[in-house]
Image (cartoon, rainbow, N blue to C red; front, side, top):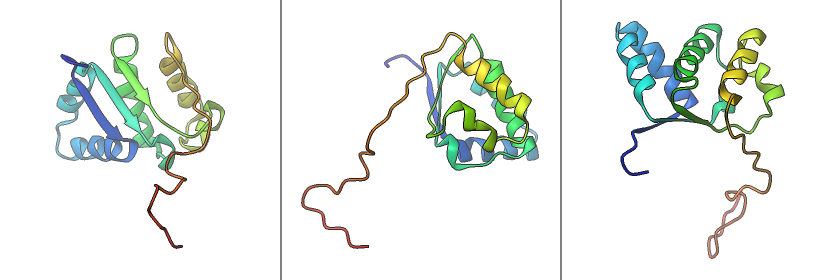
Length: 125
């Protein structure tokens, strides 16, 4: 991906950075930066429950990028289960709509590569 500007966050880190940006009155600057990145990657989206404020901030980031820039979101939840992550079901529907419009959704089913012990490594539990 030479020549591309890529930004990687965990969902928790992005949420925290957005909240901090509001507290320090730099949210507009951060939103502009996120809108300009060629590819925004948000990992571990299913490991945090977003409150209403966090949901709205994430929605704005995604909506600002819709049809302009690429987003990758990793989660182990089906779209139908996203209502467990966000308080507002209407916003969830709009978020999924923006993420899936002109998109490629990859369902990766199978064993986790982390579930198996590496050769020669003994793990006691």
